[in-house]
Length: 383
Image: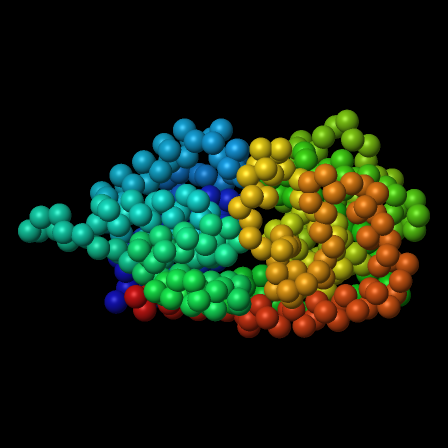
């Protein structure tokens, strides 16, 4: 039976994009009468036909310290969404990524649903699309997912096995990774001799805080590499407004080209990349671009993180491989000199570069076939 309405909650630009792709798949599967969609999201969800009643994507928090500073904003959004959910009683409630918010929201939905009188019995199915990284820190939260969710849709291949060992009561389905659908045409493998693979791609982050904290290191490293090799540095930003987030007091690398959007096209031209840890490192891996990963955050967030994180790597390709494929430089270790040296080792050693490319070819197969959002939509409707 086609649900009459579905509530979706996304709180970051990446979640907004993923939710919009899910909505399109759900709509196609439910023709000729797709459900009504409403919830929290951004411009991509709105363009897909979702009634966005609150936008949480514009200034998403980075880490617990930043989240605390924005607490009142998130609290107001939480209360508004909960009121609307109780009033509209959707058949499905789907959290898309944004785990810290969505796990609490799922618990609140569970507490509000159930029998509410002789003429009303609202009991929606609750789904989380993209597992919170409980396997990286606070594994006990897997039991919270089990209590409050009917289904967890995983996009990383190792998660299903992890849940089966740590919280077997959690219903998990691996649907594949959405980046496979976004970049369906497989790129040619890069080589240091390939004329089409001639750029140093700079991907310092998609959020204001990331850009401010990473840019000095990224720009400094790019300048050193450019002066040593003559390679073209290319900065890709997610939106035009992101230009204003680049610190004005940091000199730009010589010959820098700036592009808004078009990440896939630029990855096809990149010989190597410097990127913040996160999903973008998977996109680099998909395009088989050897990448140096870095991450810097506030002192307080770093102190909290290093005490609770239980995985050996931050870059997802390294987690998938179980070893260092992309060198990682975290916090004080992320210096221009260290990052530049790691990039130059690839550019000066074609055999090392080729070995990394071969490793990335194997990793790509683990992300699953195309159709992640289609399989996710099917699973949601099967409930």
